[in-house]
Length: 582
Image (cartoon, rainbow, N blue to C red; front, side, top):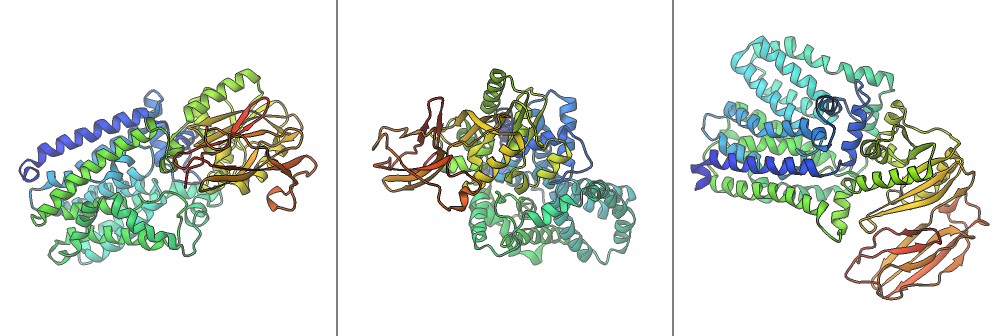
């Protein structure tokens, strides 16, 4: 088979194809929300940060100091790490086996679709793989050469790895247990590990400890406590199906294959296999109790990378390897292409597309709109709702001073304290300002508390403009502040059912909107019924004399396409979120 006969040629071809797609993607995708915030943190260099240690931010800062600022150069350090991983994997493979099959192993490593996508983003995940793989390579060099310099290099790599993410600490903990057990009879190696590697490794903790001692251990509180419910979640059972599909079925089966032949493996291979399996099992089991609010399917990526190194050894199972390479490489290419299509071409935006890609979208349009609105209004200051809006506007506009309010998203993602440290949390202020709010990011239960808090902090708010992105995927509101009055935007509750839509909108009594569907289906308009607020806890703090609910109901709504509701005021039109047919 061609994969067996010319693996080097196929590796070069697949590697070049993926690198070209990654470069194109990194140039053309707007910054993901987290990427923008890491960039913002990189403008405020520190020993560590409240949600992450500092390596990702340090690498971005170095890149931006060396090169012109754009999305590609922000992502370049991570891209370089991603491009090195197949070569590092092949070097590690040669340490694990005497067979001449490293090119085929390189192809297997290119068969991880999540690795292809992680490589195009300035996020810590790629650095976990980079320092984890490089540390294993350095450890096997220590065993082969037994030189003090090798043990010092291993300590340095582990120290840098500690500064990528708390999840690297788990890798270090598991790997240490496996290594000390597997090589417990290598007394010379263990002594040098303790004498040379451990002191250098400990130095890597100093920046994190120094920062956390000053900030009441914010990093540890968030990563180990605040972000996790620590109670059983049955929804985690979907983890196993998601992993099987994301890794691609044949690649997943190949990753599991070494367990069947465990007894025939060399000690070095068993070491890598044990680390990979323990790492995977930790996420499989702890996931029933830990954070499932964010996309976390990529967390076991390091496990699959190591499992493929072991699975690539030997000549058995060639048919499965060939099938895994073909489907996996095609899956990697397809995932990059599909991501580009979903972000730049797909119309209309499906519900799944919206859910997976919303934090990549709309930032340049928001920046352009914010610039236009701010110039037209001649505002004294600009304030945003949460960390993501702040970071994106700081990056995509030339506005010098933008701040952020306290927001549920800041707390959820561990960024509230970091914003405060960098001086971006807005305190009470008077004067004519502009508030930019991603209205669609607020849950219904969060809207009233947030807007009332904004009113108090900014001496009143009044809706002045709105931006509807991708037909309801995102809605941003623009408010004039400092007027002394608290004029809430229309806050709606929508309940779609088959063939009809009912709901209500909260609005001021003296400015009721006209309510319409933005399609030609069914009843294009409907005269709403005004009702008092009542005792609903959602409206606590609102004046029943000032606000009312307008209840509405549309029948014969579209059954095969998404649609929106329009709230038409004399001065502007506000759109509802996209309503997808059931």
